[in-house]
Amino acid sequence: MLEGFRSPFDATVVELLQRAGARIIGKANCDEFGMGSLNLHSAHGAVVNPHQPPSSSRPWEEREQRSAGGSSGGSAAAVAASMAHVALGTDTGGSVRLPASYCGVVGFKPSYGILSRWGIVSYADSLDCVGLLGRDTTYVGQAFDVLSQYDHKDPSAATPDTRQKAVDALNTHAKDWNFASSLQGLRIGVPQEYFPSELDRKILKPFRSVVDILTSLGASVIPVNMPSTPYALSAYYVIASAEASSNLARYDGIQYGLRVEPPPGSDLTKTSKIYAHTRSQGFGSEVRKRILLGTYALTADAFDNYFLQAQRLRQLVRQDFDNVFRMANPLKDLPPVSQPDAHPGVDVLLHPSAIRTAPHLPSPADEADSSQTDSLPSYVQDVLTVPASLAGVPAISVPAGLAEDGWPVGVSVVSQWGCDKLVLDVAKAIE
Ligand code: GLN
Image 1 (spheres, rainbow, N blue to C red):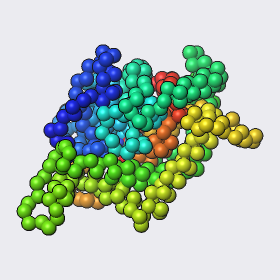
Image 2: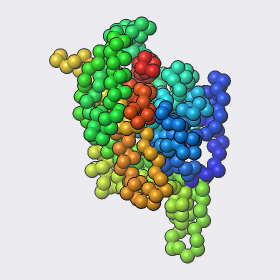
Image 3: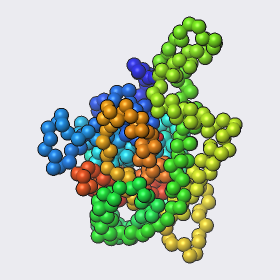
């Protein structure tokens, strides 16, 4: 749809990086409109994960072809292949954290509203965040410092007041720990629901070694429950598709981008013909599927059962996060009601970033067989990343070493809205 389109202006995040002296070296491949988890839905073809297991001595042409993850697979691959120190991506439901986990790099989705979305192609506005990928947390943290500024051009940007509230809240708690020497005083929750049946057991060993590192540094690791987690994936796919169906209505063949003139002889009006032909040819199959699904969820018949239910589930998922953190949510006006017998809450959550290591890219034979390219296995890849997206909280995936198959495993550190510095600090202790 946007082939050959060149934006007449730079996104705020690009401008800020350039102003700080960074050099933009290229644009990275990604799933079309950010829709995908394996980077298979790109007009440019799939991104191949640059990682190779240490024991592999195969020449480049015969190497294992695994997915770099999606949708920001190109950004993760560019960083993993040492082409860039830092890369940008968008994370609507995990598109920065999942590729980071598969490629063995750091992937950070800041709190919703902290980085400007001005100039970013919208997928689902209530979830879209600009995210950062980097070789280590130092690069990611430096780029985050440059980009973390209020931008009046982004209507969903957190205001300076709200940002200050979050900084104050974090400072109040920061006296409880001293990261310079240890993680003494830091309370880390491990949510039991983040170990679903789909999770490959190979992930557990690297995950446990991270838990051991953190406890040896003095942190307390506490099991916690987040009971609404199993509903997050379905709620996400309804909300994201509904918002996408509305956002992508702007690609109509009239205003900009591709325009396909209809063949003569159809009985639609001229404008609807252009609209229908342009959208049928300009969008790939995954994007068309999401537009249809989202449009359906917003119809009068389906609205209550799909869209409203998904919004209710989103509230429950958010509530789970507010219940486990000891920091109050700065976006809520009221402090949490204190429950005398409840535990004091945790500062961060720790869980595997993905249910498995990078999957193999489908062979041409698999592509011909539709059961092998079914979307469900790809949607399930997001099961551990979408809850933080629905709640708008900061989440970072850090490499936790290699699984038995020699491929990278990522662990995620998640915290309350506005605690971006805290997740970066804890991530630093892990790497
Ligand atoms: N895989 C998810 C989706 O297809 C997340 C994508 C994203 O974060 N951009 O919606």
